[in-house]
Image 1 (cartoon, rainbow, N blue to C red):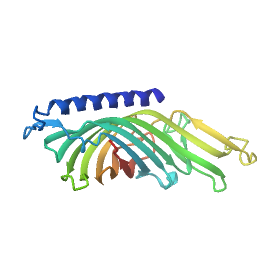
Image 2 (cartoon, one colour; image 1 turned 45 degrees about the horizontal axis):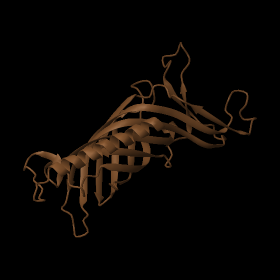
Image 3 (spheres, rainbow, N blue to C red; image 1 turned 90 degrees about the horizontal axis):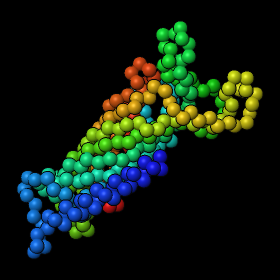
Length: 257
């Protein structure tokens, strides 16, 4: 994971330098900037919104009640965008690349049906917590490499050099890590409920989670601060191999550069 973050940082730095070179070359010798009316060009320095950090409240929609997703579910995203003007400084198309991490806290176990004679053999099923179970943490964590694309519309800068912005887009991601983490009563056969000591379980790979996801995005903001949302059009689990669930992200994003 550390190597992936370092690779993304170096990629972002390279794109940033490349974009700066493009901007410099687009400047005329007399200091004026020439932009063709309907051509693609890099945006001016106050409107690139290149590096974007998103802090999210996460949830899954359309899930069985037994999953009982908790409101404290959360995550973060980090993206680098390359902003391209569509003939004017107020409208741009911005493709990007980055990482997305979500942590879904819930009150149930995910168990793969191991009965080879059952119709649901190999299917990931939901097992609700016993009513008297004492636990501290139970979560599903998913991390994706994602490619977002936004259509951005901005107002002209005000006297403070800030703009109102709105964007709509789409993003697709490839799953690179999935795991569950549980801290609480020992639920292994013969231990529960006699063993009152907390134990930690971590499953490094969640079976039947889709390796590819996609959905629609939206963003609304002023200056470097925005509110954003994502709704997953694809199911979290493979069709028929797990509970239904569509990812939802709502949060605040910051684009300091």
